[in-house]
Length: 283
Ligand SMILES: [Zn+2]
Ligand SMILES: [Zn+2]
Image 1 (cartoon, protein in one colour):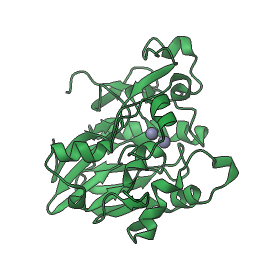
Image 2 (cartoon, rainbow, N blue to C red; image 1 turned 30 degrees about the vertical axis):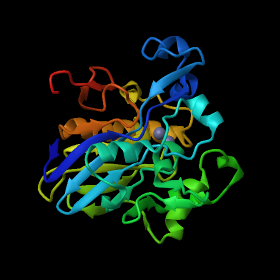
Image 3 (tube, rainbow, N blue to C red; image 1 turned 90 degrees about the vertical axis):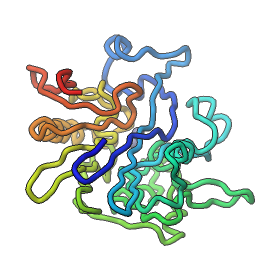
Image 4 (cartoon, protein in one colour; image 1 turned 120 degrees about the vertical axis):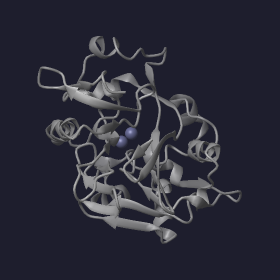
C-alpha cells in the first residue's frame, strides 16, 4: 500500500502461540475466550507483524519478529517457526538483509527485536542487518541492558547487545523524524521506552498510518482495559491508548496491529460508548 511517499508492506516476523491469560491481563477468561479460542495448552495464536517501508533509496524495517535463537523448549512452548522468519519473508519480496538501511525497534522484547541477531556457524552472535542503523529509544535501551532484577525475563541481551558492538545503534530520546514521513513517538506504558511510528505525515498534513506496536497489539486490545499482563506501566498505557486512538480516528489514519493474525491494519471509529472499534465501512 502507498501512504503518501511511502510504500508500506506488512510482513510476518513469524507466528507464535502465547498464553491467553498473559495476552489479556486483567480481562477474565470468560470474556476473552469468546474472541480468542485457546488451545489445549491455554495458548492463543499470534503473529509478529512487521512493516517494510520503502522510500527513495531507503528500506526501513519496523520490528523484526523473534528470530532464530530460541532453544528447543521455548520453540515448542511458543510454537515458533524454524529459521529466522523475517529473513524468509523479506526474501519472498526479493530482498536480502543487506538491503535494509534502517531498523526501527518499537521496543526490545524478544518478539520484536529477536530477529536482529543470529548465531553464526561457530556459535558467535552476528547482526542480521549489517547495513542498517538500528533505532531505539534511549530509556528502552537503558532498561534492556540494565539487567535490573525487576525486569528479569523481559529482555534477552543476545537480541540487541551485538547491535551496539557492531556500531549500528542509534538512540533517540522522545519524538524523532527518521526520514520524511517517518516519525517516532515515545509513548511508554507497555515498556518505559515503547515507541510508536507515525507514517506519511507532511508539514501540511497529519499521519496516514500509526504503527501501534504493543500499545494495541491486536484489534481485541482496542478497549482501554484490554491489555497484556506484560505491560510494565499499565495505568500509563490505559491513559495513553485512548489519546492515540482518538488521533487515529480524527486523522482518518490506518492503525497497524503487531500481533493480530487476521486484521493486520484497519481504519477505526468511535464505538458509541467511550471506546474504539474497527470501521467496517473503510477497508
Ligand atoms: Zn512487548
Ligand atoms: Zn509484542
